[in-house]
Image (cartoon, rainbow, N blue to C red):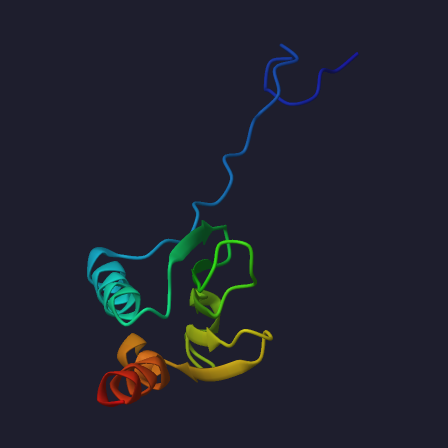
Length: 119
């Protein structure tokens, strides 16, 4: 009887390592957290959460901890060659902006912050 998995019939199984998870690099995270800090100062956001999976990394900003996120920034490298790997989602889950550069995707939030500071 032949054993499955390893040569020589030892019966040992080969374990495949899962793909690595997607994350933010240092400059991306610095840019996102800088915006978060300014929104906290303006009284708009109070909490955040980050999620890292094999397909995407996301940063969610909350007005209150018990709510849906007011904004969600998602990095999905598989979409790099299509509409861009960065997406900004609104509170209801609608796509507010997509793009290849993080700065351009964050621009609606930057405009909202400038409007709050001016008022």
